[in-house]
Length: 93
Image 1: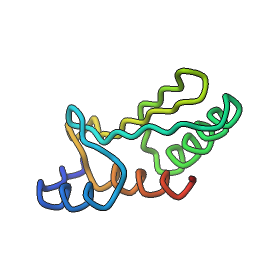
Image 2: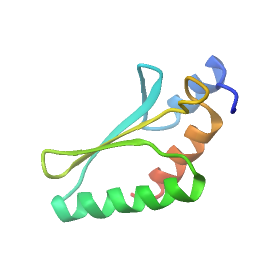
Image 3: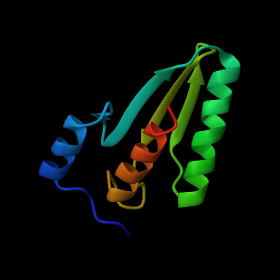
Image 4: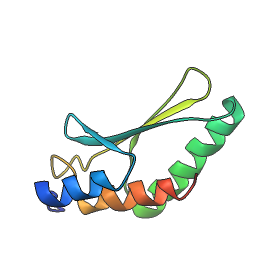
């Protein structure tokens, strides 16, 4: 089981990234050009997540919006695994 991130580390990380913390998870939303672009982005995120063995909650809504929530369920909150996946997802855009 991965250790939870300390509050100071998390605040510093959040200050440098476009993610927010909501209900014990990292969250971010993207607006893509169209439905096909949103699906392509979801598929790219799925590939990254699968390669890390870490699976986010993914919502595709309003035809071109994608919302991700990252948390390590087995640890009960945000871990380094979540930060790493978030940074890798950010590199997709």
